[in-house]
Image (cartoon, rainbow, N blue to C red; front, side, top):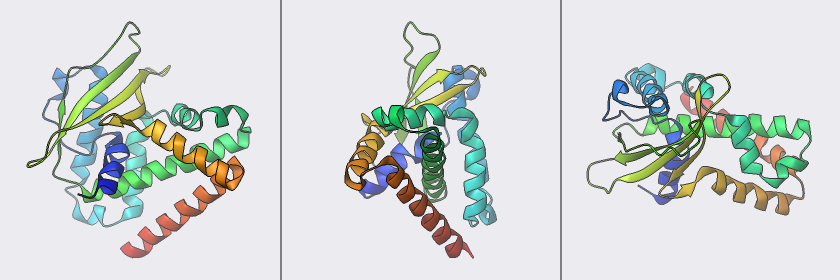
Amino acid sequence: MKAKHFMIFGLLALLFGIMPSTASAETLAPPQQVIKVSADKLQAKLQDKSFIQNFGKVNQFVNEVIYPHTDFDKISALVLGKLWKTATNDERERFKHEFQTLLVRTYSRAFVEFKEWTVHFLPMEQGEDANKAIVKTEVLQPGIQPVAVNYRMFLADDGRWKAYDITIEGVSLVTNYRSTFTNEVQTKGSLSAVIDGLVKRNAEALAAKSAANS
């Protein structure tokens, strides 16, 4: 697998694990169960060959599965860092929407393309704050070394465990995208211009996928 494709798969497609797990939900802690249950829902859909041919439906389904267990407000604020503090309310909402679209469409692509992985749950890391946890996993595939994928999660006010960052072999989704968008702001001159570019890329990518499936 090409390194670029693996990073996309690891940092984005693993947002809630499209792969079947080696553990049963009953043996897992609540934060781990979120990953497991979401994975099972997505894995079951892979059996419907007509479904995976319709990217629009895949994209919608993936968003419905991962949205309740992902804090896109928190992720967006962490990704933009200092830029979030100076952004207008309109810029924040636009960025959150487009960044969510970026993650979901990239995840949806990987959801269709990668089918033969399994996830092994490692002991969960939880410090003094019982409302935060790091769900540690290994992605397994015959013939290659296990890949470490960890999910940073917290217990939200609505009682759900939600992810706000993912690391693969020590590389953080939040840190990776923060660097990308910071550089783009410096190049384009403003956060608004960067968001406009993201809007365009998302629209073009979704249109291309829809055309390919028509």
